[in-house]
Image 1 (tube, rainbow, N blue to C red):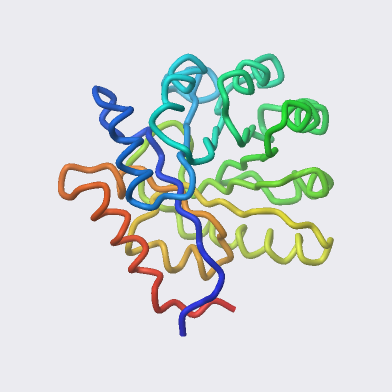
Image 2 (image 1 turned 120 degrees about the vertical axis):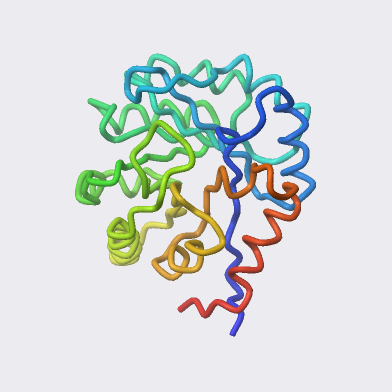
Length: 228
């Protein structure tokens, strides 16, 4: 049985070839991605350092897809406007990095973006229960943040199920994104757990196949999936 609910795919450029980043974003767009996922790291909240608003602004000419920014940074409230100005469409901040989460979510929405919150693998769903009515997106990390190419932590999928149930009980319409170790082997179990959007980096941008082939492989892994 094929589900009528379309699962969205958000290729993460963290795993792309940075020497031809615009070209890779264009390839992902042409391959049928739904979003372009931007992993922004500051070297403080996570040990790695990636890119910022200037690079993101330069990518807009390579895609017409929504830019899905995941801010792995400390004090995100100080940088929200910079990312709004760069032209992103979604801004997701970490619950662990926000002292006043509601205020940050308001900032994001006032900038005209969809507002999201991300949770590290061991951060409980309860940490954002009261924030659910103000959220458009919840990003569940199934690996520890900071580096691509990690293996999915299967125990975290229980959080995806809990979030799905909690949102339904509260009548909140939130998009559940899952990020970390997503590939053709793991994608079906992630979707069964309740994911609406799959963030995939090394499964899309790799040297073994073209971006189009990689996206098709992910889509095909879900084709015959029965989703309640």
